[in-house]
Image (cartoon, rainbow, N blue to C red; front, side, top):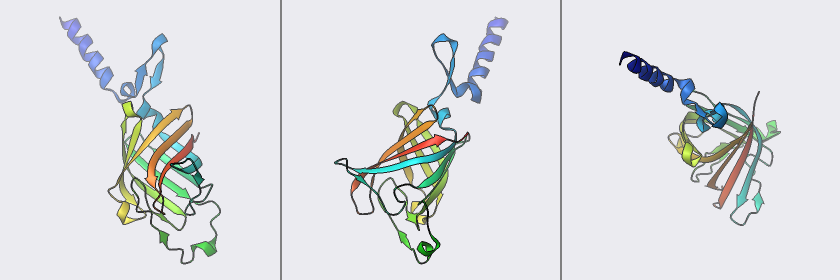
Length: 181
């Protein structure tokens, strides 16, 4: 009886460890990271594309056709995002104001810059990550929950979500990120 109890306790402790929770057993005895664990790391923005319901690609002037940026997910459940319009000039920064998106499932962009931070949760079965904003460039964005569908393939993270363009159009946004090594 004592041996069985010891084995049960060891199995329970092993399962409860963070390392064990982040891995799944797959055929052949190999270990694979859980979907949530695959998000952890720093990601460099490769592309950001916005399309209308008819499939037409549009370039939003706030961040331009080829924005640059980073996305960071850490193991404690925190997220940070920074994106900027490529090649912003100093003259553009003078009295640039903001173009508030005020749409659903999106954040405001100021002077070609977008940034926020907070925590995140993952619905693994649905492949959805939700960013819970604790801080952002616009106070209107603080407290928002941003829902993002995602797919991780090796060192590529593709995030997609529906939102509203600054002009009020329903659009789909796709961001492709590459893991920083």
